[in-house]
Image 1 (spheres, rainbow, N blue to C red):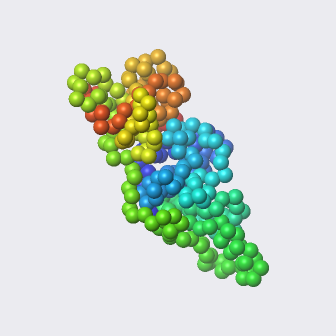
Image 2: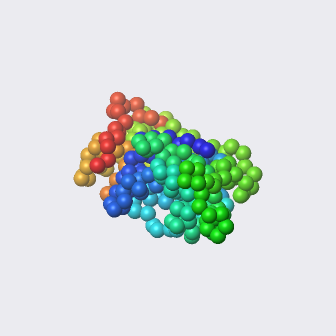
Image 3: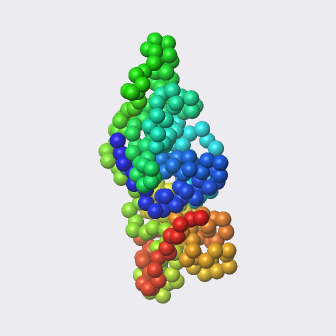
Length: 274
């Protein structure tokens, strides 16, 4: 099992993106956190070219997601992440009733405060269906006080693909949304604000050539002057979403070409998203 502790940016994005689903906002918010937890597992242990997160752009930019029957595709398998505080949600009968379209279900439990999640394990949907059918036909009811929750260890997911070591494919650059930056080595450069740090595997082209390294997107503070919200009132986690909504021009840099600004301005604070 693995514990995932979402930071402020994770929690803000999960909550704000969930507002696209007014009827079940809380369910969607914890679902987003579960996807973020599994994304971190994939980034740590699975080669990036062999997994895909269907809702990555929607959650990172807090936009409405395009409907897909799965959350991730890993080694060619469609995977759905089920996140719940109620462990009974992971019983085979409950999982099968809610999802038989995917190949694999990953189970994530969360604390009441939603400040910590545990990736309990995963199982093939066909195995869950078989267990339910077998139990109904041959086994009868389970004991009331001892229910079986079939899961495979998270590390067993690695066995579905090629052998991999500990990969740790998280961004290595030091910047986060809200940081004030400027062009490296140029004391006269204009100050910009980081709005988005792209995943290391993202292929980005500048002037017709692909960036060899990690990309960071920035905007200039003056670009926010004529928009409905003052820059200092925009949570750092929502800067990419706000720029997208307001058509604010952003600029992409290789992270080695940026440095923290020398001004005394504080980084953008992150007030609660209403």
